Image 1 (cartoon, rainbow over the protein chains, first blue to last red):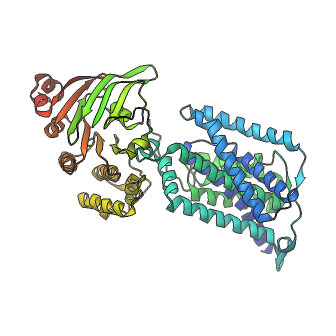
Image 2 (cartoon, each protein chain N blue to C red):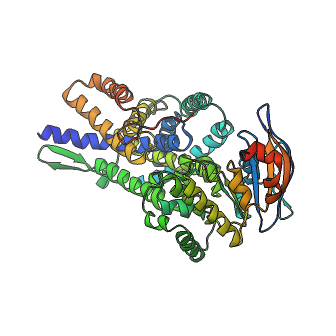
Image 3 (cartoon, rainbow over the protein chains, first blue to last red):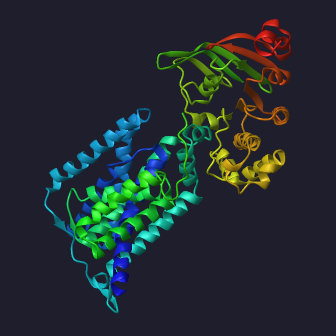
Length: 294
Length: 234
């Protein structure tokens, strides 16, 4: 029983990371119907920015987090502007291939500058190094931090999307671009904003992972990126609450498989879920079945 | 008020509009009729900035708006109710209406206009918290018109507002269009239902395969034998 509870705690921690990343996939998909494969690499760059802030400039956790989110926001907006915007009226497959190109560019570009060596985040000190013990369950302060920052960011995101003017514009553009334009909404800047928002969350996820797992490298985004993508598909791609649920679900599954089954199988199980979802309900948990109109 | 001169539009190699010119004077209801594929919708999309012409000019109150973005044109007082209504199905009725006033900052005036729209379409007030996609076809058309009015347009474009509606509702929609016009908004109306459209038109244009072939006052066109044969079923 205690083992299970411990696994659940770990699952929620990992799930937070997936959920943060999945939100970016799902928002970008919702607005321009693109699986942005470069998203996972923005997460990696967030981790590096956090690393340099902490180890070279000696900044604390919070300033580093905010700087990483800020730089990732800019990066997301620039990528959209340079790589995707010129292809706004191109076929979806051309944009998808471009996204893979951008992803490789970021991975190997980063490797060129920082080398392929694994870096380790500085040890956390003080409060952040502590752990709480309840019976045999161990919860580290880092886990609490990670989960609570994720929740704060999600609430903030929901607030932006549901109540602000730009949030309403985002939802309108994702439903019908032409009609949104007729309302006087600037579609291009709304798309930019969406990329920026998603990238900020990915950057936050990168720093949190760096703090929690310590080691980072230029290819660290690949597998978590795919899993976060699966989380987004599981919850219903394009649906924000779906990405949150999907993230926690995938995180929990992965930890439980590793804890009770065989950790060799945990990736296989997660990808198995993708296949299952695509067969049984391709629109995802919260998705409605819509027929593509011709 | 609105003047388009010699507009050419291409979709790839297809020459969709070939030198279309038309004029809408302040306070008028101008109707554009023609068969499917004649270029009526493309004309409206070009005027509202969704489609860029390959030649010609669009003038609004004498100012050249040919190269302006759609949102700049909304700011200048153009409002477009697109074909097929195109309401935001996953947003509530109220959110749809609020989006109609997206570029406006005058909160007090916006809520006045919201009341005006609710007065014109009481059903929308009843359903304001409902998802727009759950409305019936006629209600959705009312929402689309209400949403367009929320920008306080000087000139309103309506693209086939009667499409897919029961005859009784069609009559109601046409009454509403006349009311809106009487309240001071200039109207450019695209319709398949030529008979009803010509009855409320001050002037009308007939399009065929990308060009305007006939123009005149509504009553002139209703009496014309060619029009009767081709569009009025007799």
